Image (cartoon, rainbow, N blue to C red; front, side):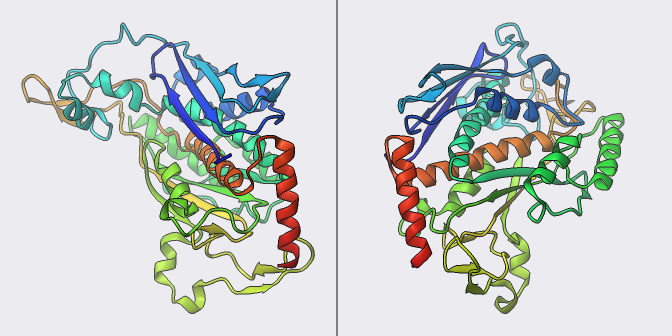
Length: 380
């Protein structure tokens, strides 16, 4: 087995979204309700549009599952679109700034943004999130947890760190928040900012953090640049529409510190889990493109939604005259939703790396390889 491969198909207002995930070992129990729960989280959040109440996403299994367990063959999932109006929607007569509209039309040599925006839409991330939720269930078999939350929105920052909190507490805090934020005081300010932006016909961006707990050291690689987890994880997060920056650990702050203060000292580990540990985690759990065994810490910055009710200056295709961009139903902000997508995509990349390391056609074979590897780490 060489890891995971995945692909998706479908348009924003088409019949359905389809995802195929290849490489899952056979015998993995798959909880469809847990996948639906992640999809529900993706649709929640203060500042979302009315479409989120319309769709109410539910995943259907088309192939790859029998008796609730994977077969080892490709897993095919489907999410139906209730708003399947692609054939009747009008063609915008102008391109919207901040979207793929103009560059996509120039790519295809057309003046039909509908040709581009239907696939470029963030609606596609629903099916990728479903695939990531399946990958997360593979990781859970080995005690690996991926957790995302919002740390900044509309320039309002949270001041509660997720990593030190017990799992139950951080999950409870996130579930209780309208914006997936662990800091209730910051949440109140964020909600007020969203409401103000809505009344001003504006939109907001922000930053979310994705953490992965329980990772062993040595996932990823260095011999081939494409094996580096830093590149693979960064690419996964950048594949989410509207993401403009990604950090690992201290990220850009690392450039402002001398090496004597930045690098994490290696110390003797206390208890099980290997003989080594880090005294700090400024590197964010990655060194040389591989996991260190510390908590993986990623952050992604999302720009404000470019579809504004007030419109953004553009030009008309036919005449070239200045106009305001056509408004299409959109969120005031979707940073909380993007955090869920980020969590799912990080799970996909980590599950891929885990299977590349361990191999195995069945989940039992993967468990055996995991046990041998962990035993080796105890004495290395």
